[in-house]
Image: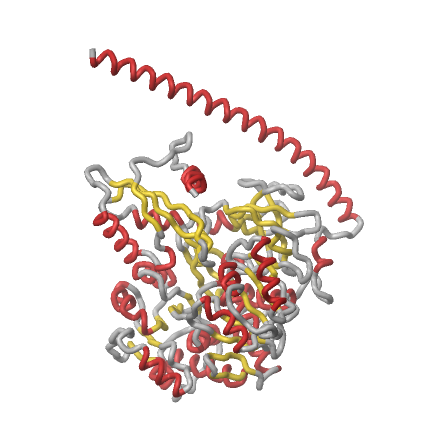
Amino acid sequence: MKESKLSKEEKRLLKEENKRKKEELKELKRQQKKEEKERKLSEKIRKRNEKEIEKNKRKGILPTPFTKYYPEGVNFDVEYPKNTMVGYLLESVARYPDLVAVEYYGRTYKYREFYEMIRSTAKSLKAQGVKEGDKIAICMPNTPQALMMFYATNMIGAIAALIHPLSAENEIEHYINESGAKFLLTLDLVYDKIHNIIDKTQVNKIVVASVGESLKNIKKFLYKFKSRGTVPKIELTDDIMTWKEFINYGYDYDGEVACLKDSDDAAVILYSGGTSGNPKGILLSNYNFNALALSCHLMIEQSGPGESILALLPIFHGFGLGVCIHTPLCCGMRVVLVPNFSPKEFAKLLHKYKISIACAVPSLFESLTKMKLGKNDLSHFKCAICGGDFMSNDLKAKVDEYLHEHGSTAEVRVGYGLTEASAATCVTPTGNYREGSIGIPFPGTHYKIVRVGTHDEANYGEDGEICISGPTVMMGYLNNLEETVQALQIHKDGKTWLHTGDVGCMDKDGFVYFKQRVKRIIISNGYNLYPTHIESVLNTHPDVFTSTVIGIPHPKKMQVAKAFIILKDGVKPSKEVERSIREHCEKNLARYSLPYEYVFRDSLPKTLVGKVAYRKLMEEENNNN
């Protein structure tokens, strides 16, 4: 009797499953018909647009309607500097030797002095045996030593590999080994991590620096007092030295220092997720960074000699290095370095240092609106650039209102870029904000929207993959030809186009709109988190069978990672298991990419082809909230 009932129940379930599959198939066919109809309509519009463009070309009209929104005197065609990064910086030194180049907690370095310190750093590198083409890893926050090492590396013809100090041990090991670095500048506070992995790398010389190194005497004393017990004990040797000892090595060096490199030579390695979401090195040239610097200078009218910028975004971040440091130093500005800060200090820093320009992520601008300032405390503040994440129209209006209430004429200008294109390629023109737009392309930079998975150009207003061609596009991924070929593709126009993996569209005036990411990137407080990388770490835990990571909303960070985990057979969810998984992640992931929440599931939703339907998990989250 029991077996008969079970058989009926099985038949009922089978019937329901067949019914569900028929409904899914019916829905799939309906969607395919809709897409085919839309495709035919789009093709019709595309052909009409192509005829119009060809007609305009015959009349000598170039399809760059956005140039009319450029600042006065700026043209699309620009001749970019054909020298090294330090060579471009030297032009500022020659023009503005007595202007302040860098300020660090009240200590200032004029352009002439700063350049001499870069040269001293370069002499020390040569005295330590560093040669042209060698790789130097810089694992530092924003300090004068980090900048001096960066430009000194460029001066001697070496290549700088920038590493986030908060990266996990295994990540630092991977970055150093992938770059092939044999020389390392690192922060004393993270030396324990370096000590644990250094024998697994090719590094044979280490310089240890402190954020208190360049402070004025009284501030340096106070820093040493406050940091007691937080700095790990470091056993110094001939190959492990302090910054001061390192600089001393160069005093007696009298050989050649500067190396004449070509503008197209590799100069910088930055780390990002690439199209697959796995951390990899991005190789950028002198030309890439110099083109970025001049483009930003042309598009940001407020940049110029004597103006100041708050360098909050870190040197190991493309936006921080390219826009907040190299750009202002190449046009005579004062760079105010901040190695570490609380969002609550943002307003205070803008007022204290009389900042003209600040670049920040949306969450930081939002925190600004909660700070109390006097009516005219921001009267000197002229330009706010927002990047790293989407800024809603409501938040922009809120920030603009706050700025105006405190004496500033600035309005938030939204920008867009990615490390593969030297961090910035597009910005909202002054006084011409369009809701949802990320602005117009930089001079010399071409934008194209193509239908995803093709080279076919989409129509105005039609969504597709954002592609970029121009002087800031990377040389390629380090030691990864396969990913490079996928990202850099030659189209029928003969140009090399960077396929960004981002979905957007362009209007008839050339304004670009960002919609979503093809890649599963989570943007958390301006940092890119890569779910596939986090999942790969989770899945190496002995109790984890599989996992899926999605981004969920967060009131301050915009998004954080949430991990859905299926445990192996025989392992039951418990606080002990969760604690073990958390510790495993803390050891193998950077702090900013750690999952904010861990959820244990018996199963995960699947697509029709059997893949995990992470979008359904996102829908569940939205419904629950």
